Image (cartoon, rainbow, N blue to C red; front, side, top):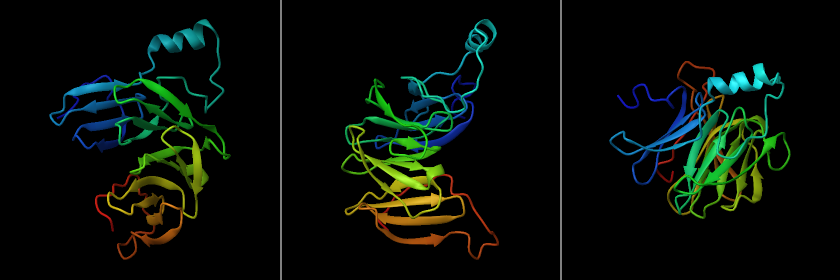
Length: 226
């Protein structure tokens, strides 16, 4: 068993493996991201869990009210993060998430670079950014689930384009070959395939013939070019 009684292990939302075979856990419950080596030893922790004293200071001592469900996130912390990816230089990107409405970038040693996004439906806005992936040119693809689109950014976090035509994208991945293709899974069991210009190449209903009427594709991984 990995992470027995680990402080950051509360409610894991996704698990990813990087090219060095490190295992990353994005923990929605604790607001933390853990990097472990192949033997399960923790090598890096990003973010922090809200402490009991934070609640006391905010709501008891200062009398604040928790009226903003989607606050603008702070540097170095996450609010119900959902997924993680890396570019060719090993920079780290996190979709963040259910509480915050943004994606964030850190260097490979965990140094905070910045974040893009607020709650909404315009450019540089997100409604439940639920998945994230990088292509070979270090473009970042963010599954903007509530807005039925995938937003694409350069490695320096500049908006490039939106890809639409899918259902609510719960997940995204890029194929490893050349040319690369984008796949997205939605909440009704459909998988969509796009080229990187954003052209829809086709889709498949994964639940047909299996006695199901719907199937939520929560996460997806691309390990081949087809």
